[in-house]
Image: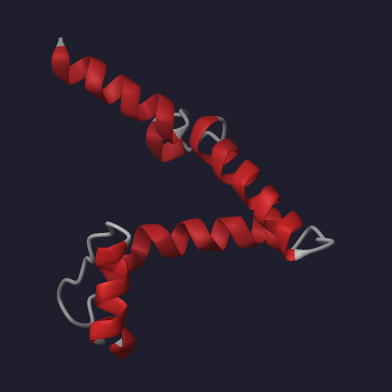
Length: 95
């Protein structure tokens, strides 16, 4: 992760309006959610398909992310998709 500290990398993020998140050094829990997503994406998209080009992969990845967020249910989200769960959560706290 040393490359995340480079000034050129940090300036590129700022140029594109991205806020860099760096927390405690060496805490494996910091990336747990993304590591989980990437593991699922590899098993559900990457390993079971062949892609004709990088563009084809990009298109399929975009479709996968939309499906993952809107349709793929998760037991730990009470059987809802992430979008459904978030909407349910905000309805509950606003009532």
